Image: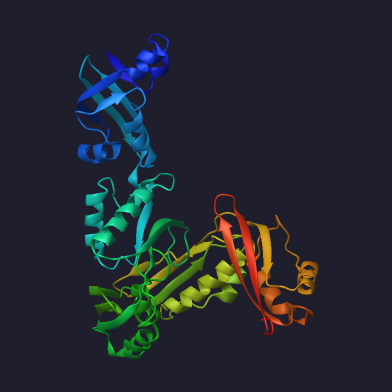
Length: 424
């Protein structure tokens, strides 16, 4: 006898509903095909299936569904074969790992990255460093992380979100984060700094040595902050080695050795012109030229000019890839900058807060960007800066927050006005 979760509707014509509902199908063996790169044990832990289980009409499809729910399989089919005790056959097609989103872990400082990956894999065997953006694996991983924290006696609040690409980290990731307690640096000790970089490194340590700690694949990480003096001086291959960080009651104690290498100069830099940002625009804004020291700061400022032009036309997810090609013999770099614009966003709502009725009326009369207009970040900044002459808005400062929905490409804009000081 053969039973499949795909053919049960056909069987209902042959067997009474009550008899089928009461039927029980003991599982003697489980056979898995197409499961790689996952082992049979890893698959069965997610499928919640093992020899000795007894399935019913209502549960025969559950093992395959558990696997599909993770978002890590393109297809999963369950079939029972044989009389009496039966063989359960799972035919699987896993999603290619290189099409999934990298997992980023922000501030889980109680483990080294290697320890975190190993411990997490032990609790979530199917974990391979990536997640789907359409399954429940991130929920499973977050639950495992919370259990791991509890086992260390840490009371923490965690979250996970999909983070869109930025110029700092141009990749889409699933980011797992410690929301609380807030993780801060307690001390920083960097050895091996060349004399030419000593003063700049000391300034960075003094400025950020007690700031919020950040590691992972989103935002500007602590490691990148500490490498900025070297990057800004053209040491493009600089790296931090022998990194040690430990969590204390005062925060993260961080130490590392700087391996600076040699400074690089610019051999060539080119921009791929677009209708949004022309070759003339780039020629005017570019701060790096052949023969210049390959300054990371100059590159970031050049990229920021390009990104601002895209933001002004609604491309709020836009970022720039510098496309560096390093000549490690001549110690030069060639840049080939290109924009990754994403989609155009439009305004969905605009909500000004804390205005008097008179100020609200004045805002409504002078605000020009309407729902369904292309969202223009520059316009918002200009409105806040330039409308201090308006009678009822003159007594406010203002800040704004724009939240874009990557599914609909619509923006909810909130402008928070604070009375008592001139708008700026």
